[in-house]
Structure formats: structure tokens, C-alpha cells
Amino acid sequence: MIRQFLADPDIVKKSARGKIDDISFCIRCEYHNRFIFHRPIGCAVNPLVGHSLEFPYGKLPQIDEPKKLMIVGGGPAGMQAAVTARKRGFDVVLYEAKDRLGGALYWAQELPFKREIEKYTNYIIRQVEASGAEIKLGVKATPETVAAENPDFLFIAIGGDYTKPPIKGIDGPNVCYSYEADAGEVELGDEIVIIGGGLVGMESAMYFARDCGKKVTVIDAAPQAACAAACKSNYPAFLQWMDEGGADYKLIYDAAITEIKDGSVVFFQGGRMQEIKADNVLVATGMRPKIEEIDSFRHTLPETDVYILGYNCVNGTIGDATNAAFDIAAHVF
Image (tube, rainbow, N blue to C red; front, side):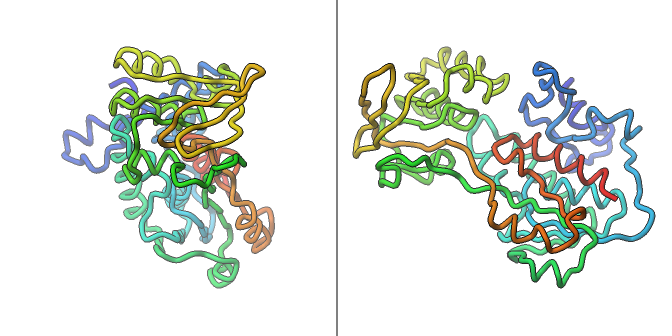
């Protein structure tokens, strides 16, 4: 309940009044543990946490005159920006190319131990819909769309593209992105190699090794310390949960994969080439910003009125996206 009170200080009041749909539930993401890394405390689903002096009682500054804000992208950053801006009095129009809001949140909630994210997804969508923002689903915004809307401000929140490293055989039939495997879209064999030992890769490793009984090997070019840092405070828990669950797993660091074959992966580590069996290879090497698409919007308005949400946290967490969006939407004028 301590973390839940960070996620929603009014949970008791809302529960007593039967307003369950208005509760922002904790997603157990450990974002509040930022203080371990000498950063201010925060919350992924309640970005007001840590701003109590700047915004007493959650009161955001109202704009002096009517202004229009256009948001491109309906993922966690775009939705949080819309809710925050509406609370300040902005006239908000949000464009989402897909036929539903949520963005990458739908991939993030696939694993059984991350089901709390589904609650958050439903919650923030309801908040956007109730905010009074104009929502245009299934419409891909373009620079021409911006010109037609003629907004005072433009927020670009289009996320990124999943990356594949330049490895021989990376486009083979036995290779897929980890999120595709998490969602059950790919039939997996008994032995799996995961490329990438960050947060996404380790989550997939824990699920397939501990919960599905697969033999999993995680390979990363970075040293163990860097991968552990990428997992933030979750890394020790991953190892503990897999060990306690009897998972068959192996972590290989400082290794460069040179080729993916039909049934194996070849990598270089410790001065020699090695080969390990792999029925399937899952890619969890992060995302890259959609630089070309972002650039197409940069000069549609004066540059001081165009904001890019998530550009620096495209490989970050839900908390990184929502808090960055909140900070911009709460201060733009």
C-alpha cells in the first residue's frame, strides 16, 4: 500500500465512493527507486510525485489565454501529455496512426508478471477520453495535417522502431523480436538464445526459463555491470526468481555474436569462437528514434513551439515516458 499511495494518494477515497475505474494502480515497476541512483523520487503512473512543492495539491498552472496543442502519437507519453495539458486548459487534439490508444503498452503487458500494466493502460486511456481532448484514431499525421490544424504547439510522441543488430542470419526464420515471442505469436523450441541482456531481454529470459521450462541463454556485447545497470534495481530479483524457480539459464557477457544459423548461434568471447544450440533467437536490443519522421515535423511550427517527447528515453521505461511528457506539458507556455 505504501507504493500504491504514491501511484494514487486518493485510492481510499475513490474506493469508498466506488470509483474504481478512476484509480491509478501501482504497476510494481520500481520507478520510485530512482533515489538509489541519486535521482529524485518519482512514480511511473503518477508523475506528480516529486513535484509537491512546485504543484501543491496537484494544482497545475492554468494558461492565460486559449491555446491549441496538437499531439502526434497515442502511446504513454502522448496520452500523459494530453491529460496534463487538458488540466491546464489547453485545447488538445491527439492523432494516433493505429486504431487504438496505448502504443507499446500493449506489448509491455504481455508477460504474466506484468499484468498490472494492463490496468494502467485501461486507466490512462479512460483519462484521455474523459479529459475532453479530441482523439483521432487510425489517422497518420503529416506535416500537412499540422498545417491544417494550425496549433500553437506541437508535441511529437511517435516512439521508435525496434532494432536488429547487423548479424549474419538475423533475418532468418528462426529469429524474431522478444515482444513477438512474449505475446505468443511465435512457436518456440526448447532452447532459446536472447540477444540483449537489458530489462526487456531479462524479462523474456525469466518468463521462458522459469515459467515455460525452456533452456535460455542471454548474450550481450556489454559487460555484466552495464547490463545490470540497464535492468535498474530489478537485476538481483531476476536472478533470485530464476534460481528459486529452478530455471535453466545462462548469461553470457562481453560476447559478440557473429552469425545466427539454423539451429545455433556463433559468438566470439574470451579470445575464441564458440557455438551454442538455439531453436529460436529472440532479439531484445532496444529501439531507435524515428529520426526521419521526427525531422519532417520539426519546422512545421516555430522551433520553440515543437517538442519531442521520448526522444531521449526511447529505450526507457513507462516512467521515463510519462514523466518526461508531464514535465513538458506542465511547463509549456
